[in-house]
Length: 233
Image 1 (tube, rainbow, N blue to C red):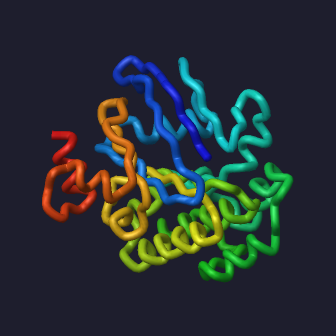
Image 2 (tube, helix red, strand yellow):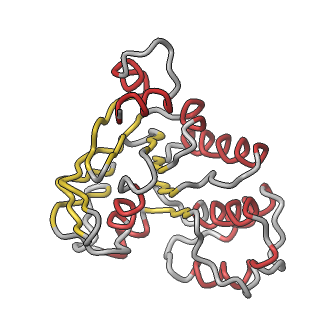
């Protein structure tokens, strides 16, 4: 579904170095690593938010530069820091986002708004962190995206909202969606993850199905966090 090959991006104080991995269709893939390891930079390159220096990114056989609109139509995005205008109502923000997608589906949007208990007339700057994340997910699910790309989606959420979030991702997987998300809350992946990609200091250390990832740590019945810490050293 998503293929990243030899992706490099250089900053003064940090570099992605020939990052390569594959996100399998219909799987929940966790992208893990310490803060500053390169997770967000990699996602921003995939989404076309920052240019990269070299490498190739294919999403469903498409590249950003061959057909940018078709490429972006494929993706539903949820970012931890959001991309909303705080003084807008959710309804006004939805109208802006909807205009970017030819496959926008208002019936899907209202279904998820109702499911998540959100009121369109509420201003974004009055929403809690959990409500903003629910709104972002509702938007991401309303244009029939094939892949959801999420950056630290459960960071700062209360346990109940985190559980709801994980349940929704599992439900979307059952519907055939591909889910790729970065997180430092690896306990979520213990519950719902299929595959794990570990990045450290701008390099991919391991890419494997979850069970194989845990075995490679050499630990007895480890959590993903325990295995990650062992591998990073």
